Length: 132
Image 1 (cartoon, rainbow, N blue to C red):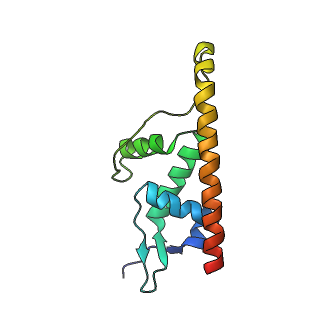
Image 2 (tube, helix red, strand yellow; image 1 turned 60 degrees about the vertical axis):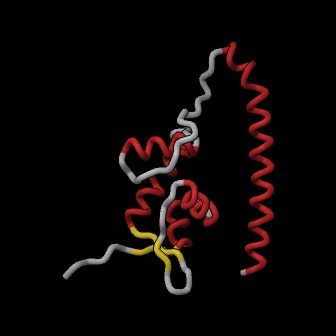
């Protein structure tokens, strides 16, 4: 008798990972993870997907990789096929002093861009919640 792998709904998966459901959906898109769907469109993830998400979470939150850097790491580890890599550097707080001054402007611009994206995502989340 063949045992079936455990299936997780998005809420269960996000609880196990300790992240919000919209983050799961975002990572699914960014890391080209294909969830299975029920006839009604409900997402289901298996134990392999859970492991992928745990690795992604570790790469991003604990090891400090960017999304592009995490994609490269996953590809190097053979975790799953990835799309085009745009950038592949690991984020680091250790910069030589001369480079620190050069990066201040770009870091500020990047943080503003991220803040704008967060605001847009928050508005979309409110809209999604109103639809549910």
